[in-house]
Image (cartoon, rainbow, N blue to C red; front, side, top):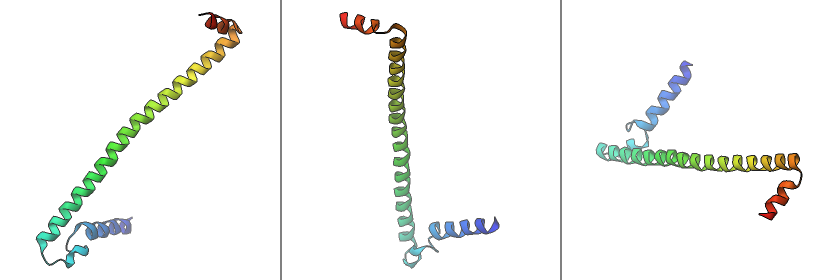
Length: 96
């Protein structure tokens, strides 16, 4: 477990520490900082869009499941009515 924690820490340092990641080759520390800021904005927007997409997709998924449930209920009720009343319900529907 300790090795995993150290591995996580090393990876964190490699990505987020501008003195250890590949940006260390840029001589200007302000340029490194601004590149890290822009990257963080880009990652934040990306994850924000993913979360928004999941919320929108969840809404569409719920609507599709509701429609599916309505269709199953309608089919079961028609089958139940046909079994109970035979073809009387169909003849009455055609007369109307």
